[in-house]
Structures are given as structure tokens and as C-alpha cells.
Length: 124
Image 1: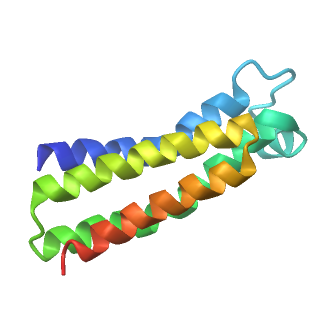
Image 2: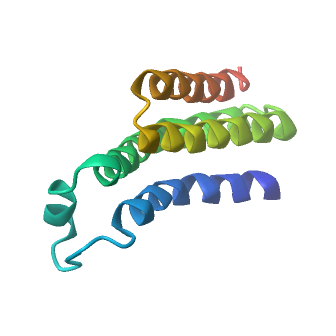
């Protein structure tokens, strides 16, 4: 269960990876009004911010699926393996987003959704 806790923490921190990428080294970054600054960004910075938003949107279903699976006594090692796959897919998603590879990004997004669904049904 310790592994699952670490994977849940990693998932919770994942959106902040995108945030750091979007803001790192940005000119005239205004920490008093970061959303307005981010809204003016273009290219990979704007895509990193969009990836951050999408990752925050993906977290509730992911966490609910993990908790449902564990509540229904799914094997923790199996759940942890699927969680690691989800995290890997989400990191791949960020990489595809930053690279501007939209079609491939959508496929990786679908894979991450598939892993979350697999987590959910591992508890059935």
C-alpha cells in the first residue's frame, strides 16, 4: 500500500510539472497575476499550461477509480501496476503536448483514460 500512496502523490504533483515547464524562464512572469500572464503565452508554454489544466481534470476520475478498486479489494500490486502505467501515459501526454504532436497526444490521452478505466474495473 505504500507504493500506492507514493503513486497517488506522484499523480497529484503531475500537474505542477506542467506548470513549472510553462512558467520556467518566462519573461516578465507576474506572480501577482499568473493566470493573465499564462493566457498571453503562445507555443509550447501555452501547450504546457493546457496540459496542466487537462491533468487536473483527469485526476478526480483517476483517484476515484483507485479508491473504488481498493475498497473492493482489488489486488494492490495490480492496482499499483495500472497506476504506474497511467502515470507513464500522462507523462507521455505532456511530452506530446509540448512537442505539438496533437494526433499522437490524443492517442496517449486515450491510453491514459483506458488505464484509469482498467483501474476502476479491477475492483469489480
